[in-house]
Amino acid sequence: MSHPFYENGPNDMGIGWQIMYSLGRVMAGFALAALVGIPVGFMMGMSKNIQRAWEPLIQILRPVSPLAWLPIGLLLFQAANPSAIFVIFITSIWPMIVNTAAGVKAIPQDYMNVAAVLRLGRFDITRKILLPATLPHVITGMRLSLNIAWMVIVAAEMLTGGIGIGFWLWDEWNNLNIPHIIVAIVLIGIVGIILESVMNLIQRRFDYRNK
Image (tube, rainbow, N blue to C red):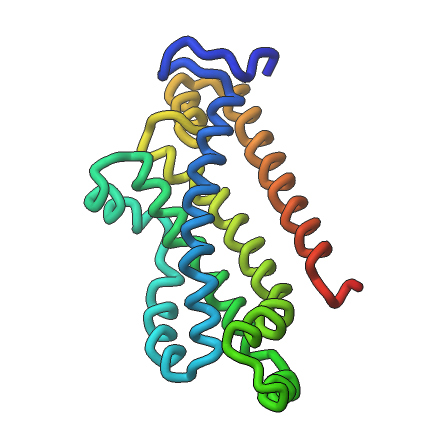
């Protein structure tokens, strides 16, 4: 803890670097999940046919254990880092899809009637009605997804190895260094609290219901 960012080669780095590498993987997988999940959620909320097509797939894949995806990631990418990002992506995408779709379906029909009367185009409807009305649901889905992503990366790194807080924790277990394990657990919890607090601030900032 006194030198969290020391670096003596790729296999000997401080715990600060371990956390930063893990956060980098989390943010990469989380961003990919947002790029895919939010548009899919909008399409599901706006089209019953798309919802019928996607809902069985979501119901089947959403309960799958995160670590069950790791062999698929290793098979596809043949490397630990993209495999971990893939696991983050595939496990954190579902809350974004489900919450975004729920937000679109919760939009009052009066809003859409007004848009029809004003003859708004698709772009204006999306920008002036859909996005503001669904934003609280979207951010809620993102907050849940980020929590899942941070929990999953620790387990994924234990199996993939390399640099990261999960691998570091497992390596300390192999060395029977229990104090370091306790420190890692506390830091994982602290980082999780920080991520949750940041998303709560964003949610309060953009939630029109709090204004």
